[in-house]
Length: 110
Image (tube, rainbow, N blue to C red; front, side):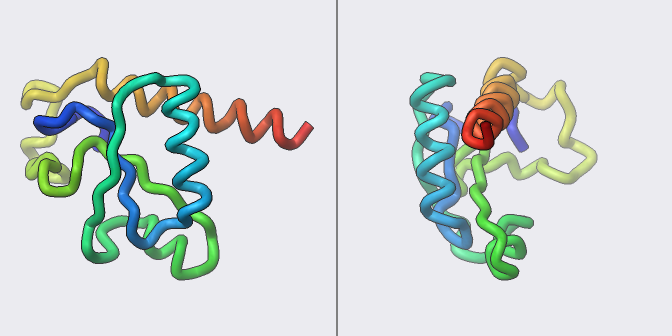
């Protein structure tokens, strides 16, 4: 769920059923380290694991590949393969974001 950028080609942060403070922190990491466009969108329901984490008191953020109305309808199907218009460069932004998150948390714990 990281290599189908939809038509907007923006990293998207789902803004419902998440921790707002953590989401803003992760959005800031995109600005500081990744330097690509991003936007916010909502699922309108508890559409992924982030909602359960939030419900049980664990802060969560949900970076996603596209605004919710543009998401890849082939996610979790047999058509969810690299040959179906997936964008590996776009997917690399999520790897970079994960690394930035780990670096920032490591620095905060020093």
